[in-house]
Image 1: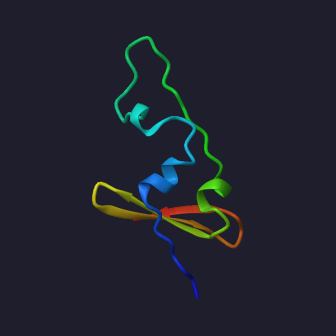
Image 2: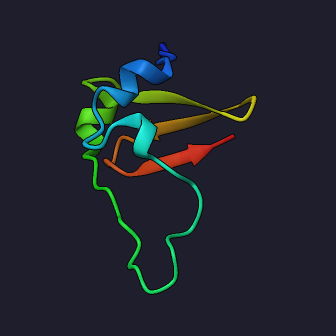
Length: 74
């Protein structure tokens, strides 16, 4: 039996290295290289095997497979 956990944005945001107010989905200004954040899958999954991401009214499931691969589905 698999148990899915839904994390609210503040819980996930606390794991981010940049403050939430500084995040942007808009491209960087011309001439400025984009900033790429790196977050380990272990810190996102927090010991679990599935994470539910809420984005613009939809839910996406990030799952860890038996072969330690990641699958993202809507």
